[in-house]
Amino acid sequence: MRRIAVAFGVMLGLVALAPPAGAADTGQMVLLQSGSVRCLVSTDDPAFGGGPMTVCALTNGQPWGMAPWESSKWHQRLNLAVVRGTGEFFWDRGLLPDPAQLPTAPVSVDGGAYKINGWTIEPEGLRTRVTYDATGHGMFVNAVEIRGY
Image 1 (tube, rainbow, N blue to C red):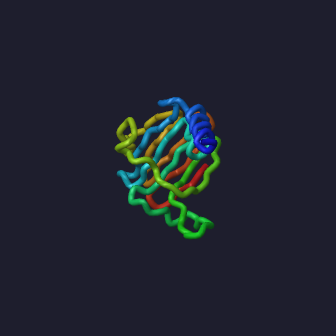
Image 2 (cartoon, helix red, strand yellow; image 1 turned 30 degrees about the horizontal axis):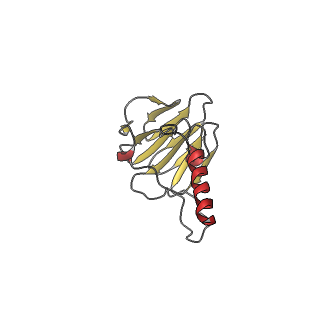
Image 3 (tube, rainbow, N blue to C red; image 1 turned 90 degrees about the horizontal axis):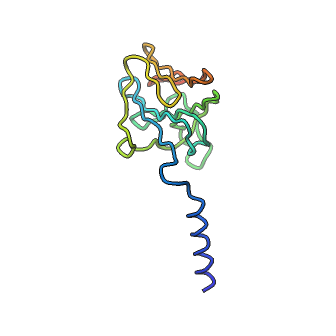
C-alpha cells in the first residue's frame, strides 16, 4: 500500500511539473543545399539547453566528414551541428524530429534570403549562411563542411 501511495505521489509530481501543452517551440524545419542538409531553426530549443539555436544534419543521416568522434562506448562521429544565437558552435549526436510530425511543412531555402524565428538563412553559391539577427552570429553550411562564426 505504501509503494502505491509513493508511486501515485511521484506521478502526480511529474504531471504538475510538465510544461503546458503547446508551450514548447517546435521550430521550423528548413532544407538547404537542394535538400541535402536539413536544419531545425528555433527561438527556444529545450532539447539542446534552451535559447535560440539552429541544429543541422545531413538528410542522408550520415555525419559530416569533419565532425569529431564522440567519446562513448560506440565511438561514432557526431552527426548534428548546433549553433546558439550567442555564437557558440558545437557538435552533438541525435536525430532531428521527423518533418511529418512538425506542425508546419519543411521550407526549401535555395533562392533568396528567408527569415524565421529571429534567424536569417541566405544561400551564397556553394554554401548557405545561417545568422541569428540579434547577435550576427551563426554558421556556414554545405553538404561537405560546416563552420560557425
